[in-house]
Every structure is written in C-alpha cells, then in structure tokens.
Image (cartoon, rainbow, N blue to C red; front, top):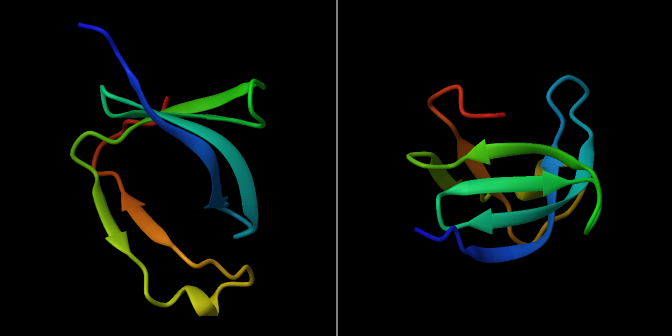
Length: 82
C-alpha cells in the first residue's frame, strides 16, 4: 500500500521545557504519521504517529504569547514520537 502525503505546511509548536513557540514544516501522510522539519526541504526533526490521537480545538488561544486564529491541541496516548 502506498503512503500518500495528505497535507503539508507550516505549523507552530509549543516547546516542552521553556514554552516558547517554534515554527516547523510538516507533512501529514495517509498512514497517520506527521513528519516535521526545521524548514521546507530541510533537516528532519522527527515523526509523530497520530493514529488514535485526541485532537481538540482550543478556544483559549488569546492567553498565549503568540496570537493564533486556529489553535489545536493534540494528545498522544502512547510513546509514538520517533
């Protein structure tokens, strides 16, 4: 079965330790994996398996230091970050 790229584009992620916002180029594939890079065509930073992940829209995005029109939160229930 072929793994197709479904979407690609820039995403912002909040850091774990210092809670700063980092921009990442991402590609979402049909197998449920999200590949993220430092820039388009750049160094691969990692792969996140989103199969079975919980996604919710965050209404409280105004409390962050960076203003976003569409903010989502993804919760992954297994050790699926490579």
